[in-house]
Length: 361
Image 1 (spheres, rainbow, N blue to C red):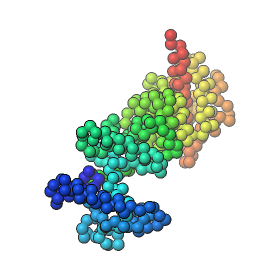
Image 2: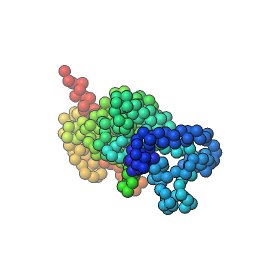
Image 3: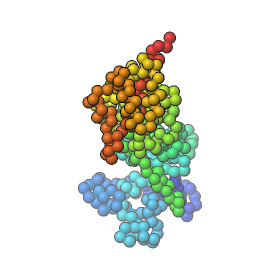
């Protein structure tokens, strides 16, 4: 608990020797707070919520983390000793460790505008804690063991994918911020990771039906490098494409879902690439995939366009109106040829794999 409340919280005050006496005094304090809980209003003097009057005895860091202590006034507003808080906020702070997630000596707190999501996390944490105490174990933070040692980004994605979404409940457009911190006294740390609405929605839709196995394959095949890029909204297209084996990792359906939801790619462009990819595949298939190497190895736009033109002369694969979708420009005026090439290869690999599966005895 020192990671949250600091080294000398009120419930473990070393000046009271007997544990039973400390617990009894703390229980009386909680009871007093409970008696003074008031409804929310339009305004108030509480520094935490601003919606109730500060009716609690002024609090210090043994009650409210990361505040000052004693007469060290620099840590308090208006240079006055103690924080003016309402009983409701002080009481809620005492129970907030039930909502925390233990992460290798640090604590993680999940915050979202979606109250239902946070409530479900709290319920899962309380169930975990009740299970520990029912089995005779010591009271401890919620600790999902399957991803405890992961980096923050991997931890957050796994928490959403393997814990929050596994219950089958849909949350819609939801964003999450995860705070990771410690409050041991002199050594305090704070970091935060944001998971955008686009990434959350992608994970939510990919967690349903057959796509869940596809998402499992993508994460298992990609290693830890995929998580920071996914969380940061950076391109992860190459994680879907295995050139060595000429196959799609996770399948085309999952890849297309990623392009639509995370990359927010124009649906018209996706359909154009699929149309051109289908024609390209039929040509490559008839010619024994001899020119697939050339498409895979090109290093610049000019060479890629030359290779497509060579194929176009033998078997038309694109129409003039397709070029704006195949080769759009970004905000800096750079042609997105490499992205088109990667998506084309992924679609061709997907069709090739499907054909090979059909031909299997």
